[in-house]
Length: 322
Image (cartoon, rainbow, N blue to C red; front, top):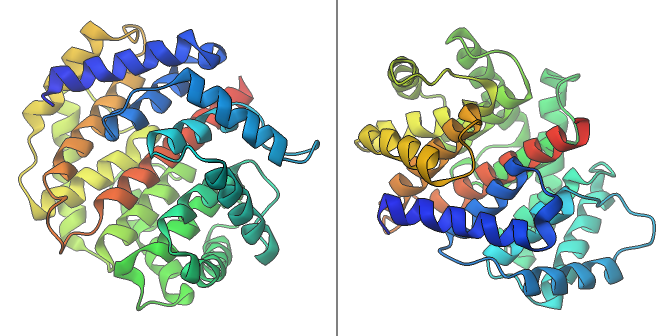
């Protein structure tokens, strides 16, 4: 698909979501859900969504923590990824309980962590969950008041990453902390978003990379020249793009094209900051597609999934506080 077709598919899926069961979603949540379908070049089906939601409700206990908008965002990501069977719901809930059994918190955000486990072979899940919990505890020793239930997805993704297989939880935690401090010294403000970005840097590089930090410095300057301020909600995208710039030439002209198309063809004319976030996400998606056939760069699926989960988590938090 060219850039115009990508944005048209995004808008089409947004409209399908808003015309269906997702009519109560705010714009941000609806567009994030729509983008998960664009990544897979799929169309949202309200019929499939309603069917899967009914299956999920039947499987859940009467009193549960999986309310809206997390439930809608989670189901959207599952459907976009082709998870449309009752067995997929059962697997999600089984993995959620697996997380709870080792000590992850009773929280709707833990369902996002369970969603990530679909990228792990069943035989390896117990190991990944236990390592993920140790990583979570290690992150908490460095940033106790910052690390909460929503950071379980960080811990699980770090445990899943092949580049970090040889490192223990006690080594991964300090690596994330080193990136956290280095990114803060680059001008990114201390926040939960910065911790997520630091974890992404660790996941992508597998070691501390001064090259990534140099690319990030140049990238922030370039984004400012385009009128994009490095706000917390953009930190993860900025780090991901900086990493991509260390291994390939990034087409920043495409970013300007996406910004124009999103302003012209979506319902986001008065949502400039969110347009910036979406444009960066679409650019990363396009750049990573170019890498998908390179077996030495096994980062695409998990990185895009992590970004979608972070965006969904942030949208859920914003919706809950509004």
